[in-house]
Length: 104
Image (cartoon, rainbow, N blue to C red; front, side, top):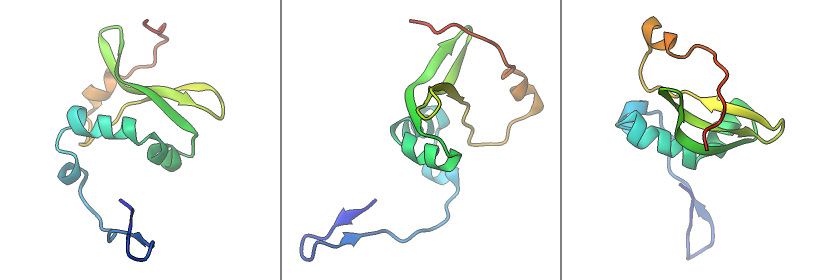
């Protein structure tokens, strides 16, 4: 986080350090997904997209998308399945491509 020193007006920066994702975000659904939703510009920078996220845990059929939004540069819908631990092949089977109509 950047703050401004009130005595000389200069930005104060923390020291960059590597950290394990699970040390920062203890629970994917309760801490990691909401952080990504609130920091879409950070994720967009990493992905090289003009990312605007609109919802977390968006329902589609019997499942929920972790995040949904659009790439503002292309106006294409973007869905994000985030994960803090390794996935198994069985878990990925739930992510088969399908076309779904948006729920209202």
